[in-house]
Image 1 (cartoon, rainbow, N blue to C red):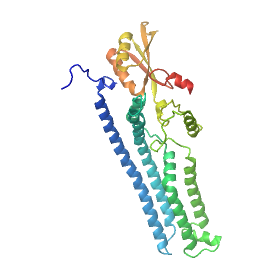
Image 2: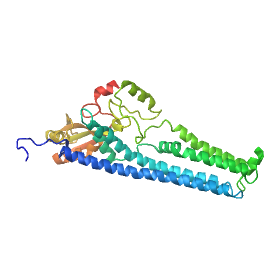
Image 3: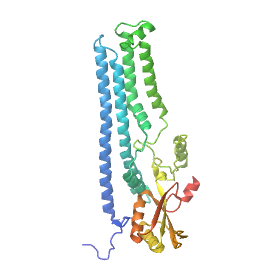
Image 4: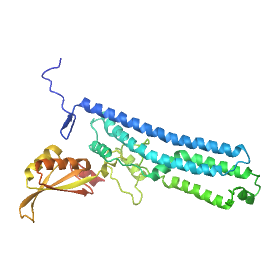
Length: 358
């Protein structure tokens, strides 16, 4: 029997009128984490499937080419094109895999890990980042990074094996090539001369390897085993040099203790202007329900000549719809303007002192 004098537990999470107890909120997050983990595992299995297809078709093509001297060596270049198709499919699947694993990584670093060490609270903007990712999902890495990463991890060895198999097949069949001219003659495919086959082959494979090397500097993937903390100055400077954005890329400011890969500093923010005749009522509703600061300015409607209140409110992407609903309930005749904000500094957003220190 509970003690009647014991006060009820305070809600650990209060958000837009909803209050969750610690057990309810933790249970919801655990189920969400398990669901995202299951979904990422499914996409991981799909990645393995395309790799398995590539390995099986490579073995089948090489076995067919060497099983009989009369079998054409053109089957190996044709299989190379098929492997490239598998690589492209795997790169697309890898982008989906990264989308879901980025959410998992965000919960691991900024929610579950925060339960284990003081101050036992999640990062200030992790929930906003996660909510924005759920409401407006977008690929976290480019197709080039995905293509290059999968090529270096799995497909580079397959292309090298195919190239070696084609080279030996061309030297040995249909007759043993003892000179360069005989090798070029053996490389011919029907009416296509051997020099053209060699030129196209070297150019195609050279392009693939160039893509694999040129994408080495892309590090937007978050599903890999990557460091999280920037607590130590030397480590932070090292990460700054290691992950410096390339020319033309958007620079991401990272505050102390944030996961370096988390796009918290890039969250979409907006500056809203609310023109209303009931500035006090609308301001009070925004302060109480949205818990955002409001700045009231005096204005004059030039068409009517009547005084108006102009309210300035900085919000994030996920708060725009809530702000519109609040204003609509308080004053249906209000005029609302939503403008994108490049950067918002201050309480409730990026700390001003952290930005100045960066």
